Length: 154
Image 1: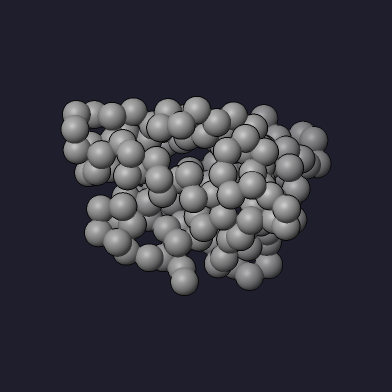
Image 2: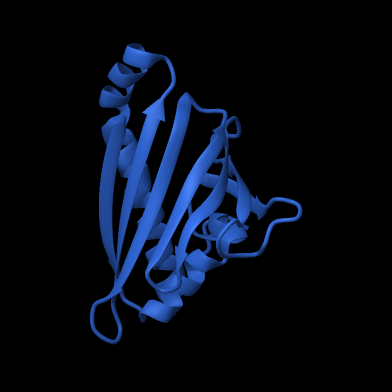
């Protein structure tokens, strides 16, 4: 199991930052590491049980995710239940907190269990800095989207 944590302060009110994460099927708008994202057929648009598909920017890999914990304007926990990457399972938790009237702090915690047992664990130890950088890029993309309307992917 590999755990990574990244934090970012966004210069926007909590409600605006939450709204960007709560639009569950459209995360690719601000996540540069994704080519596209969309809700799965029959999925709720948001909230507990919402499901989405994400195609990675590399054009080869994908993720399927579902919301397993949902506390509006506070916490969003996502189960990565299917992936083409060498990951047996994974969770991403987003904790949001107001930092005054016009700032919001996002803490993202990612936990991944790689495939391939001990070999997978060794590979994850080597790849952890790259994965952490990708998580930071996603949070920076979110900040650019909320603060300035910058869209990463159409």
